[in-house]
Length: 412
Image: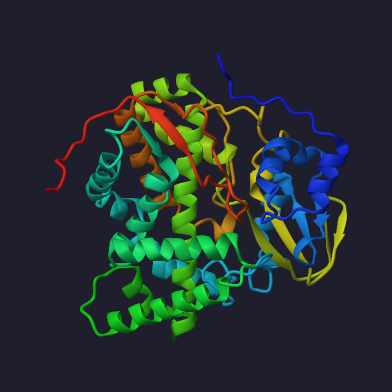
């Protein structure tokens, strides 16, 4: 049986090159990560990359977890970011306590499991609608036809109160900003997105309350003051980046791994109750958030390396979640793993505020895809494509399966 284990024996010079020049936007990065990731925690636990002005890279689990739990030494306030995004702070990821707790107090009530479960029937109907668009064909680009549009439309339809056309437009903007920050067209796209959000906020201020995330931010307070306009814009940008990429990338990565493992497909199809546990292992094995950055506030030592105040530190979560000091056989995708304390959602104060949303959406998506597509595989003669990005996702996922039936008639 295919255990999911990939044999690797990278040359020392390849590993050193990757560690010393680590840049998640390098065109070579996806291939290097696939071949070298498992070796980083033990052989390169803490390294320094010369990319983007230089920054420390923490590849091992223990140090990454400790940094996440020490906001006094490792601040989330800019300029800690490795690559440029929008040019403004994006709460709550870019703020420290105590302001961080105020943002979580604003957002958390709208993202509780109970509140989200009330949306489950609508989410499932929406997933059904997307699958109907390709289930009769017997093949699809799962990334472009499902994994990307689903979380984008969910976030903007159910949490921000806008329509699907807006979600599709913003999805394209965010992909450009994340993956092509150096492109000459990117600054103009950032400005268009900023203007779009400001226009949305202006319209919502004079409209009846919808009790969604926009209303929560418009009427919330941080440290005793109303949330400022630029802070609201930054928060919407943060939730969009996280909501779009993390959920979609987890779906893509899970479906890709299952396409390589027919036995795993059959097991989850026969017992859907295993899907939530399997999702944790998919998150560990292919951590969708490549990593998180901090700014060192005082001289300290990480893994025997001297780090100075003012230097940037990047916790490579994808590598930390493959650390054999924390996980037994970390290079094996094992949904029966007994101890899985992965940090794909981060840890501590900054643990992903939208993790409940992501889990619910991925669970419903995998339940429906497994029940409706039958056994699927990567389309013979075609290739899965990843692109360099701060996230770890798939840009093109060609799958072939036995054609199925639509659940809703085609619109006339």
